[in-house]
Image (tube, rainbow, N blue to C red):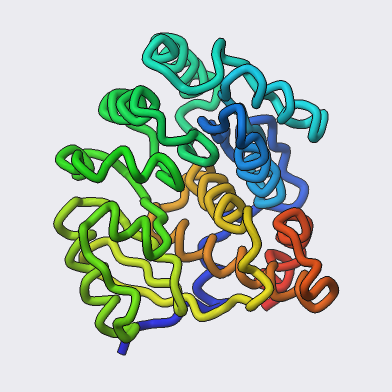
Length: 295
């Protein structure tokens, strides 16, 4: 019997804040986001906003110039560093390595990385993603376009704390396995085997969502049919990145993030139904967290 993530599981994952205790910036982590391109600018913003709603203290976004400027306009709390050009390229690597080291220092090691949303699949961008992650030792969420970069390169994941979050087609790109028509139990076995093979946690966006580190398998059965809109995966990645930055174990982080994102989606869908957007889910995350805490 595959365990289903429930409220009690998540309650034990969310970092505790002691009443009356003094906390300062970075006590609850710093999340880095690398994403965006000329066409897609909303994804990194959704990563960041959902992370703030999930308790992280600070987010820094690195995006191509046009995307970074648009992201900054979403909210004054978003710090977006513009990188010259219209897409992620190898010329950006030295800047990114430098910024990652600074982030680790100021956050006293409480730091995570979310990468992929809106990056695009330019060949140089894909190569840059691989070169970057080969040398980065942060707990990380690899999402969306960044998944495509690893269809040929999966040999270094065992040395990382990596969570890969494909939907069914991205899972096929990553593994070569086409599993759309299989039963959940069959999908789960394949996800487990592939996670063990590459040495990373895989979160398969499905019904139910399937999560495995190659040893254990969990299902998340929450969610709403109104959550099919664009951006919900960006919210999930941001929630997970926030928990990673707060020091949560990667498997527990993605399990809790899946529950909280989908529960927030359920709450928001009660109000908006067909009009639901990813921003509605972002705004409902604190309610989902409160519900879990009050148990």
